[in-house]
Length: 566
Image 1 (cartoon, one colour):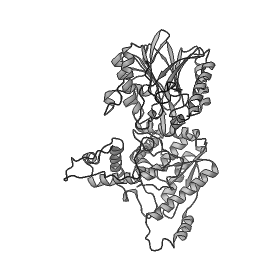
Image 2 (image 1 turned 30 degrees about the horizontal axis):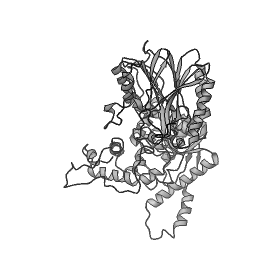
Image 3 (image 1 turned 135 degrees about the vertical axis):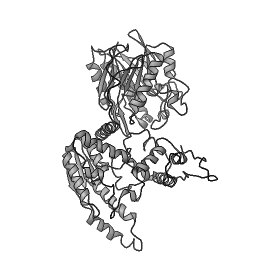
Image 4 (image 1 turned 90 degrees about the horizontal axis):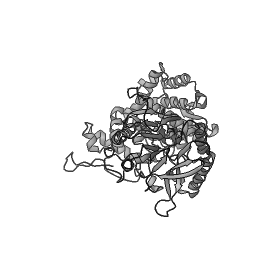
């Protein structure tokens, strides 16, 4: 039996577009395969979030399933991910389902068993857990049907076991011939190679059963779906895999036999290349799916705006991007030159809007009420907010989405100005630590064989240039230290004591964690950001704003009196 794994890019809520894409793809495979399989919730797109609270969304989805079935009377059979109604009157009103269509008819439903509610997932808000045995008899084969989380209940993946049920063990005990998994697994750096593939290889090898995995492709809101759909044979070998970050139909044989097409010795992309491709994919889809064709961003001559511009050009094309310079009396000529050189290297148009005179008008307006106060960060923030206003004005007038350029290190500790440099519709690199910004920028220059990003942009000390001789390290620890503290706290859920025990300075750790807490109100109002780490700000980060918690508490001056934070 030949199958096609449809790794396609869907738009959330666009039932007509998604259905027609599925129909067109399946029809094109007539005579080549017996069965086509989509990713999870392909018809509605993933994640649909609170669209699912409106009953007509589910009803429309069910009606569209009938439309798909009618259109595929002479085409291969199809397993399509969709929302379906729970008509039992008990539990959540919906099922996350895989729907089997053959000969123009909907013949069988399979329901997701494990309903995740952690990190960015909140499916228990909408979906009832399936209780039926998800087995499809087709072409003399017994197919075990699973949906995304159903394959993830492996004990050593979790600090605490999440589920009592294990669909893989249940299905293999019933002697299914293959396992098929419809997935919408979001991207995180290294996840495909270090987690997904080893997980499926473990199940395949343990139960001596071929494994077929179909993952969604493309970006929806902050989540990037990298594809990586694959075929694992009964010995746990990776037989074939679809490309990451691009649409592809992967043709496979259900027996799991045949010549291995993927060598485990093939070089994988570097983490810098992988993140770059993820951000290009995320930016391209976010801009297009929000209805924009053009984008603009402020160019300071610094490394963050430089990397953001390169990503945007790769995502949208240079002709659709505008770089905006907004120099003040504190802007160095070197930074201005770096910004212009970068734009020239990328063939991007620029405009220059000096803010010195505008800032003087603000100062004049505020002079009386500010009388008696010393200059402080207020005057620095005014410059940033003037720039934000100018950029938003251009965004409105040109119908171009404004992209913000702040990184994860800055956003974590609040080294950014609300209603200033935080203005925009998408925060492209807000989940990228500053140290990784440097690494990706160096990779860009190396991979291109020439300095696309001016070398001086990479080597000079980072600065907001909001006052004379300012550098970031006036206010922050060196980024190597700051990023290590942030990584341990945010992504590894380490307490202050555990971080200090790694050899980091106690005072610095306490100061950084205090800044993270104080900046929560800013992050809540920040533009959506693209998720590339295991834990990013946004849907998976749910810290309170109006709260006070001591990240470091001593009891009898003993280091072992640890505060567990999360």
